[in-house]
Length: 178
Image (cartoon, rainbow, N blue to C red; front, side, top):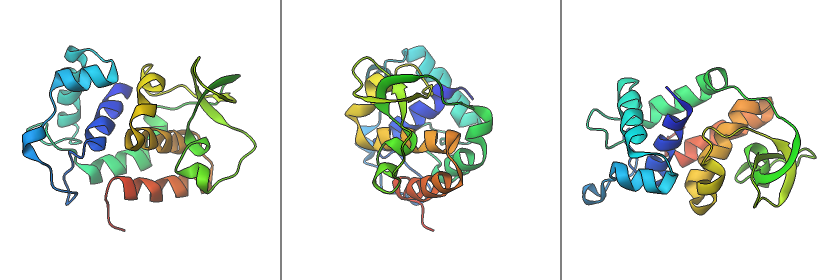
């Protein structure tokens, strides 16, 4: 797995290509590698390689059209911070992430802010390296996608309370029953 694999899977989820009893998918609107590539600013070849890696890992279906949300949830909750670790960095302006972004921002009031460094950002906080370098450019235009990425960062850098709240919020975004 590579970090961009998670980013691509989250884009599929934001478009509701889910399995494991998630909402029904309108099969007439399947994505193309080009559409995902264009939206995420990732090459078509890399999208194709990513889909093969994710299929091999069991995170998307064998036809590469739906996400196995329960498997993805387990990976995020139990593995993401070990596979793609991150430490808060220098103070910079950027786009809020982790507990500094919705949905956790509504529950957690923290003095320290975490941001993806970005010249258009209006929040000052500690830098968090995004899973892929295009994330700060593309995430704010898709609310569900942005929230999935921010919650994943909360799992990567959060303390116990933030991690617990991120897990619960992920269940809702992934349509997983408790």
